[in-house]
Image (cartoon, rainbow over all chains, first blue to last red):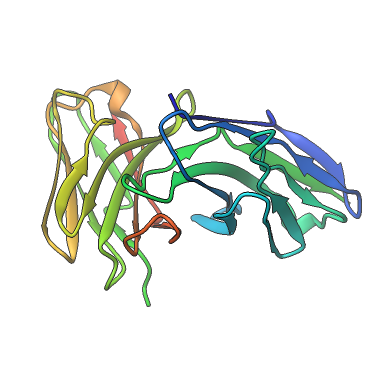
Length: 115
Length: 114
């Protein structure tokens, strides 16, 4: 079946350091995968961070970026310099461009940024 | 735009009681999704409507769970004879029709079954 595997948390990073949260997917029933990163900040709801719907393209938002790599079936989230305000839970999600639009989520990665 | 609205935010039921969860999607969105989040299973898909019609309920437990979308402005998730293992956060999301469009999530309903 379709699945998403991401870096197991919690991940603790010092402020201004770089970050990478790995995400790999398996899209056995999805012909044209779309990939998303969602984030849940403390006390808030799940919100979209970035999305990429075309293989080979890069998405970016709030200093984060992720590249959709069809060859390695990966969509890793990166940031060059994290801030305390980036502390949150990050979810990688797999969707379809056609037919059934439901998401398959990764388990989530809790990030803590320390000063 | 108020976003996706879910009510109640918290619900506590006794074992064997019924629970009804409500979702109001963003106006104009034609797709509505229900997910469930637990510590053990994470975020898992339950069911999906498009233009009020049920499209996929493959994630719904076969017994006791049902979902409806009687009009474009709300959807309900009903759990009959609730069990402790039904305790979870139930999330509703809506989107425009089409996979290129992201889903917008509501704040969730935290269901606790005692």
